[in-house]
Image 1 (cartoon, rainbow, N blue to C red):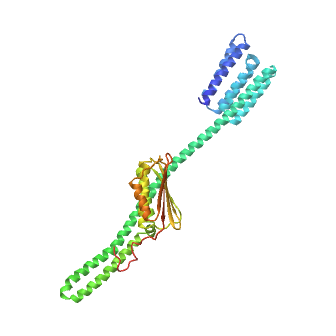
Image 2 (spheres, one colour):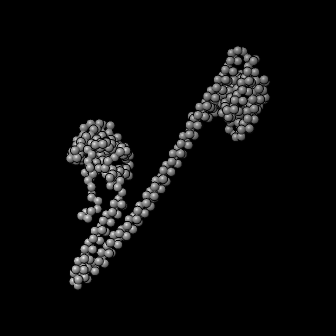
Length: 394
């Protein structure tokens, strides 16, 4: 039951006590008493349910104060019932400043008309009225705090929705930028191929045609053309290799292993919806092909097992590069188990880690997830090519 319904019930109870008090004070109801009660009830109900404007409610409450003064002078009844009825409407319908003014008037009225009562009745009329006013103030203050908190929550919820929309729009924008950048890069690569490879191949076709014609008529000239063609072909091949190196960034070459793992995690999150959080130290050193493959398989196997067996929803992967070692920690929030039977996947990962001179260990407890830790020693990255010398082969 909300506070408004509670106050409505209170008002009707107070009105009932007010009528009972009038009945007790007067042996019989005459027309004046009936008219007074009807006017008081009609004015009270209109103020609470029908009048919307503040000045109308203020006028109605002022009329009721006047009616209670008349009642205390000529009708009788329990004084506190009139005062409490006024106090309820004053603190519910008006702002704090206006309510405080009406509360002061109500207390003054209570003090004035209590002069003719005994000490016990004075305490009852004033004590009960002041207590009710204090409770109403406290209730109003708590309700205001609740409304402020609700308003703040609504604003935060709206802000969160706006942030989600903005985030989606930003993701779409980033995706479109990536697509445009990719298209531009493809266009640049096509120009590079056209200008270098296309020109070289066209020249080779022309020179081969000349060699074909000269080889019988003038073998010496044909031999010289062949030597020139070989040098031109080697030069063109070096240019193609140089263009490939320029297209492939050095950072990608050095950290290709980490980038492959990031791509694996990205695809895994899209397919399963599992939150995978990858983090690594600021300082990194490049991985050779064997290290990259072992780490890739370990991460792949761990992610698969986390979903398939552990029913995990969050996976943490930490790659800590030190001067001589790489320590990789993988932890999920899955079901875990107290006794684990090693399968083919875990055994093969252990063997691969040992081949690299590292170690592999795992730990799991029921309802505490699964933990894998490996350590690999640093090794020089194997070079795919030596720098474009004339004896270089693809």
